[in-house]
Amino acid sequence: MEDRFGRIINYLRVSVTDRCNLRCRYCMPSDGVKLLGHGDILSFEEIAEVVRCAVGLGVRKVRLTGGEPLVRRGIVGLVEMISQIGGIEDFGLTTNGILLADYAKPLADAGLGRVNVSVDTFDADRYEAVTRGGDIGQVVRGIEAALDAGLGPVKINCVVGDFSTKTDIESVRRFGEEHGLKMRTIRLMDFEKGSFSVVEGGSGGDCGRCNRLRLSSEGKIRPCLFSDISLSVRKLGTEKAIREAVLLKPECGGPCEHDWMHGIGG
Image (tube, rainbow, N blue to C red):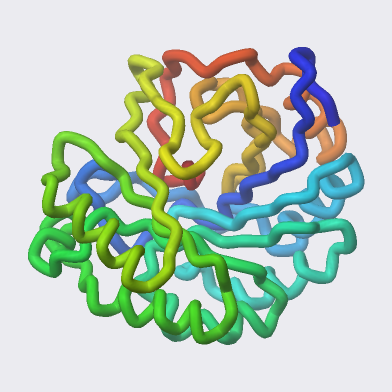
């Protein structure tokens, strides 16, 4: 698929849930957010159908996100369903790593290719403070399990903002170097101001090269993270929603009214 600006759209990010088992200070308030009802979230069959249609239209890279995708019951089954869709060349998942130690091998066996782990510091006290209660030991065990299961290359996504310290960033860089992991630095974004930057060590945030569509957990195709444009696959039908999203994809992101990072997975 090609948009109005000559960009080839071949990457679909799929949010499977708006729920998360952490309460990171920069992502959501301490008391959480209003969650979608069970009937509002796409079923696994609906998600697989969207992916199948997108692949038929030219998508070659698929990534599962959340919220935290591993808190969705039956996630291994969804991975298996998607892995059986012919034409996907890169199939990954982004996780905070808390549950990864238990899920790494089943995910690999089901056909997942690789994982990105979101972690902003490897200092135990700082991690607990930033995530409001998270245990960095669980994340480390999850990364080790992912490596053992062959879910590589494992990449570390490190968000950097006013909450970060030099020690936080260095701890992530050092852990990555010691374990042969790729580190990606993501500057904290501001949706209201339309403030974002290119991901260091990755391709995100580079509007001129953007090849992405996003499927939210309630079934809306979003052509740009920094745009309020969304098209419902349930109301329009999958193919029409995807094609219209490509046609409406803006040349560059800008200020927008939403602030739903917890439900779209970045």
